[in-house]
Length: 127
Image (cartoon, rainbow, N blue to C red):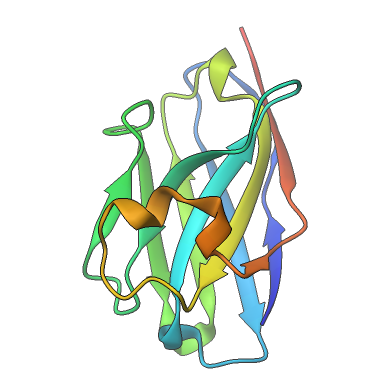
């Protein structure tokens, strides 16, 4: 699976941004998709995940109610819609895919379970 993340950029606090993740090489609906982020000097952290069918989603507490993850298996694309952005959301955002997560539980937050990663797209939120 090859993943290509895009859509990052500079945005003012309170503004929206939508990230996209284009997948190729394997049927999109066969893996769980997640978004992670890594701020300078910090560890990579879980942001959101979505089940294979798109029917179940999970979010980090820090983004719950502001971010929305979605996917369209027909066009092999996933999205992360980010609203009400805060300066602390500044990070490089990565989309990831996993075939090692049988059910949508706490395991979706573990980067080690995702075998495929995109290259990352930078998001900077100015105050």
